[in-house]
Amino acid sequence: MWWFPWIFLAISLSSCILITRAIAGKRNYNAQLPPSPSSLPIIGNLHQILKDMPHISFANLAKIHGPVMTLHLGQMTTIVISSPDTASELIHKNDIAISSRSVPDSVRALRHHELSVAWLPANAQWKNLRRICSTELFTSRRLDANESLRTEKVRELIAYISECCDSHRVVDVDRVVFATTLNLISNTIFSVDLVRLNLDSKTPEFIDLIKEIMKEAASSNLSDFFPCLKMIDPQGRRRSMTAYFKRLHAIFDENIDRRLSGSCVAKHDDLLDALLHEGGSSTSIDRCTIKSLFSDLFAAGSDTSSITVEWAMAELIRNPRVMARARAEIATVIEPDKVVVESDIEKLHYLRAVVKETLRLHPPLPFLLPRETESRIALDQYMIPEGVRVVVNMWAIGRDETVWPEPNEFRPERFFEEEIDFKGRDFKLSPFGAGRRICPGIPLASRMVHLVLASLLQRFEWKLEDGMEPENMDMSEEFGISLSMAVPLRAVPVVP
Image (tube, rainbow, N blue to C red; front, top):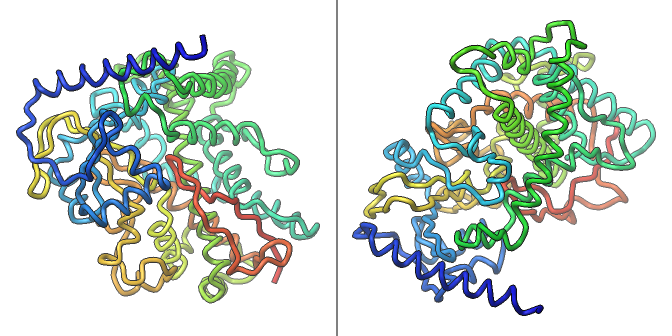
């Protein structure tokens, strides 16, 4: 009968509460938790975060209850940090004790959380995967060696936009930059392009697949708030993610099998070659782990870079003064008949300030990936018990008026007044994390974002389609693991 599933769900919830209370009674909860909003039975504070997107709801609650706050989300206790000083204390004093991840249930599909460099605890397998990423992808030597590949992919992007300009077509900025970044990563891993830029009628399936994975991983899920429901996956999040991962892994298997079959005789000197040649070593990894590593690289590497470029372009179009100054700097530093190369970026001081300001207002990850305490820790004047989820709200920190004057204004000049980078040293601007769980791909993302943005500004002026005025742009956000524009930026390139 139609009501049977709901009775079953109610019984499960009740059982969950009793079990959780029994376990909590055995734990040492003599800790002093940070202040918390008043909560309701069963759901805790869930009703207070459903009024808006989570990063905004958390920020609004923090204004009332303080920058270090406890939320009871269903049966899960979560500590929310909205202060750069407390975030710095959390990471720099307790980095080892909070090195584990709080894993969303959807990410457990195909055991991804047991194989993924993003979600594994900081164990020996995680260290091996981080070593592979560092030595084979993100060292200065490897990045310098692959500079010609990045230059080629950006050249293809500019050529495509030039075609759009000649035919007066509108450019979907996120899509073309996303495709460019995907092809950079696919060439780094497989030495092939996986998508084409000129598919105007439909977004390539591979792009859709990566975006769906990122969206599903961040979707609200009852199983994350009531762990006893994981066994039934009531909203089907894990089942959906399983289907997405299977499709993604099939693409990876096809490329791996082609390489193993011997049909590719030439040595490619790509990541796949490096992993296959590690086969007999003590640090080699199996195929399932290889596919999870590739999933992490494609999802994290392409999505965050394209989102940052899209937000930067949106803010520049919306602020013509800033756009004009950025383009004038590029014209001064780079001769008109020369293309932008990576060695030019260090001279483009204002452009680098534009990227920092974009990351402040629009961090790719509004929350750093959640951590979980492995032991009891001291934080500020509070004591946090073991097994508690800890979230840093980078979106709130970037818009805190006590940290940033005029926080809602897009003003890159602020970074000439104070030297701040985004590489984890200063939590006023740490969109990619800090400590041992800092994103290992920062060096590549930084090179790619600056190169793409400078190239787009050097070659073209930009205006909105259908004569829309910049002040009428829709700058609303779409929440996910990454924070994209709710209405994708569509702009018209014009040759100056």
